[in-house]
Image: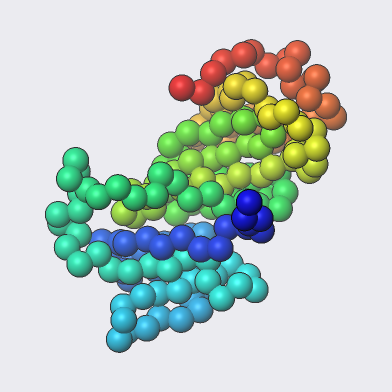
Length: 181
């Protein structure tokens, strides 16, 4: 078995490289590590690694849309270090005019989902400390959709909750068993 350590990078083929660079830099906080005009790739990072994202201009973006769009990444997930940081991410996305598609309580983590300028689905999530140890047999199918708000609307109440609660038993007894379809 291969023992992977973490997500290394994702390559995205984008319709407009400069627009995507601005979105990932100005909204999500990536830094440009290298932009190679000769080969066209843009490498962006979040920290110590050379790159987390490798972006390339799609050679024919007008034909890459709709039902004929080639298969690609379902979504890219970025983890934040605290529940407060998840709330800050939510507010920042709204401030930049990004629509939150949905928010989920996945028992071990809470997530927000949205699209980048090329309609790539992105997720930002906070995972509770010790999630792997808390759920050694998995989390079950107990996902619960959370309320979302748009620009100019009050923020959803779940963003100001103390989370995670002290135990999974508290979550199970106080939450309905709605499923994520």
